[in-house]
Image (cartoon, rainbow, N blue to C red; front, top):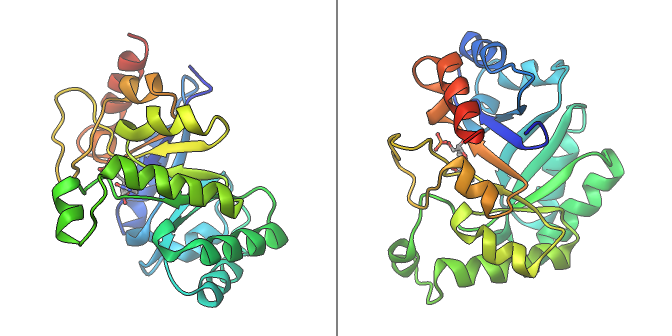
Length: 230
Ligand code: C5P
């Protein structure tokens, strides 16, 4: 079970809460990697904390801008030596993805660039509202093709599309948020799955936030381990 990547969404701007999440999710039974997103990175202490963070982490910045601005953003975080994953929106287009990948190679070869496709909070109805005529599944596959073309390393989609994506792209690193332990509140997420269902769909890693960080964190981690052992 150790080989399964569990990315813990450390979604808080409170530094002591971040430290608590990191210490209470520590276990030698599963591979846990902290994920820091917009809330913590933009907070007063966030960036400073990450500069001296000693363990590998996932930086969920969801970059989406013109190529020059996007690659400059990558250059601006080159001091974050333990950063191993960065997210960018595929909506930024092929040239932006290529520019980011090229820049990242020059600053740190250990960073995987993951393209965020359709957010897991969205569904077919939301896509229609935005003017899209394709379904979630069709758009995710189309965007997976762009990710491959750009040379980026992985994709962020929901576990519901993971099987389809894996059938076409054997070597893509697939990360899926929208994960809930059975019976947990889905909150604002729309396309959700349990950890076991996601891994059965051949994902490379799952992102879990509220199912683990709300309430008693240690109990939640044990629930996750028990669930994965089923
Ligand atoms: O609390 P929950 O498990 O829903 O958190 C999901 C995490 O994954 C959040 O940090 C969110 O920003 C992130 N994420 C997502 N959907 C994506 C990409 C990232 O929910 N498509």
